[in-house]
Length: 324
Image (tube, rainbow, N blue to C red):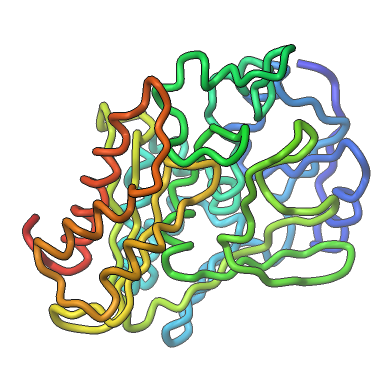
């Protein structure tokens, strides 16, 4: 591991000032970043530890609004009876992180902003993994776990467990930076990089994710993940759904796929198809087909298209209380 400096700010303002310096990187739970530093995939001049920063942790449920600090650990969120009662789908998403150690150390912000698991990136070839002649190493190589909705040369998948659910809920991210506080949809935290210099999130230098807020009142949500193994394994595909309205009819539906694209993939056509419709096995199956109608799988990951259909059907079934 290369040498680096370390800072432990006590306030958001101090943290923002430190992060604004070139070569600085925020340290949350450290469950992934330290491994990247050890493997020399990422290099930093200074780590800015956020653990002791006041105001970045905690869970608040006020009416139908759920607020979660970015430095809240996954286990703290899982153990919060009020949050889980208001949004049971949170338990589904967090339980997918099967390691107790990762849940105890990993944070909500760290989960949302973790780096891609793409093995080309993890071996030092960068997020776009382009060969010297400009060709995609992913498209021409082993791509069995990569995106079925690639964007340009970006073919990795977003690895977050919480992002699909929060995007489906229309949650907001609270970001602090040199210009003060700004709020944006969680969906807008992510981007597919177009150049090797760009990252997969939209945070500017000096900005940090302070927390997320979601209206959890009056909606039905569910998360379904497909894995090869139940423990200590990354999902092959995930779907998060949110339905508004009671009974068998969905006034509005929002369906988001995880591990399918460089960003959480909003299956807009599937949501539009279900909105205002009665949820039946037939309409659910049609929505699952619509969710993948624009998929562009590569040579080794065509199987993920069917997994996406299955994840959407089962997440919809869970949200609607149907047997599918």
